[in-house]
Length: 226
Length: 384
Image 1 (tube, rainbow over the protein chains, first blue to last red):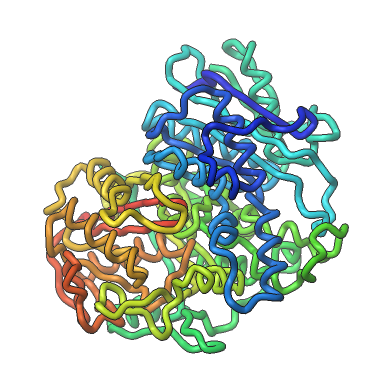
Image 2: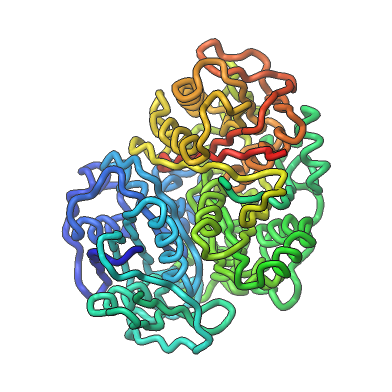
């Protein structure tokens, strides 16, 4: 039985991020934007437990770092920058925070396309069944224009799933087509659908449900309060 | 009943295009590593068929390798769909690179901020979420479909997630596929870290100097516990080092947590584990840390093997590949040779050997460790 105990979110039009105490001075110097987004939303939740299980989600991860490396590939035969290379792996933002804060708990990192927010919640809810409390962190930065996708603002959110609430969060499929309520600035950002769950969960009571993402095979994902 | 059933599995890697060939060669002590552009790599040399036309927008070498691997067990997958219903069968992909190999072959340096310079469905080919969709559509799976990407521990994590999904009642079966293909970005990245071996790798050897990168597809079909199952995924444990992005602590403290968690999940003692398929990459620091961690959990001189000298380090695929080789070890009651090992480093506290040896027991463990200090251990069981 899991419910959202607390949450925090940020997106581009909310303005610049303050420096995070979760990143050491040297880590902050090396940190890419995605790491800074994650540090900010986690810090807003309160103390960062060194052992809390973490589910991280992103569609493309630190894709700007990947493209920096692709640019480097063509001009440097001595190998790529170790800091950039290790920062290009999908779970790098959450791992950088883990290293800075001596986190020893389980970390898993999920990726999907338009249903990213749904599968992140599935992974987190299933993990919560066995461990009780899970920190969910999601982030997506603006993609390179080379992809030709509609531009969107960067988005990040963190939420704590606990079993201390009598309500239970359930993620299910629906045949109904998804109507995206997000504004133009976030509509193309697959991570931002989590904001729909966060907003809905504040007032949800037993029996309530809402759509929050489209499903890859058609229809939509809904979240229900049991 | 503890664990979930391992119904079927398949491999394509440098040692072979079919599961039987690939595993037989590994257990015969052969290496599939070959030299390309001055480096030894574990390349799948046989051609991989393109995706069906309807899925052309997803067509990458990675997607082809994943699909061809899974198709080897299509009969078992079909039976699972008939038994449980399509929406009760999920597909999870463990990958480190996604479709970056396609992107690096089509990207013009310096144009990332120029609109639409990458044509041909670049996003769908690049994304980690592409291969789950390909397998979902080609195999008729209707359950959740997503990727887990924690670099080299990715496809151990999908086994843990699959077990949780099944035990928690979300689905009844999961097709878990670890897959990664060779790409220049990975090779140059490890080169920059100074971790590539000068020749073929030498895991646990005094003269070890680094890794050989490889590619592989490794598919495992897991189903709700079946009393008649021959093999089970019995335990899973994971942890973080909280130490460094690319180096483990010398004592392997994070790996110790993962291995102990897997033993606890399996409900068995260290002595019941007959052998360990290690991460065993052949770098100085990984092998030292892993040896110390294994000794801390299992005691000195536990029987272990590294198969990286046979397949190369297959990155996001190596967890599932290692798990399959662990099942093969139980089936054959044998640990294969650690190819490339000639002179065991005297500081090692594990029993790695240059030749195959018999084991006796019903449990084998498999380790995988990754950037960010991400550790995962899987324990498989022979049930009868």
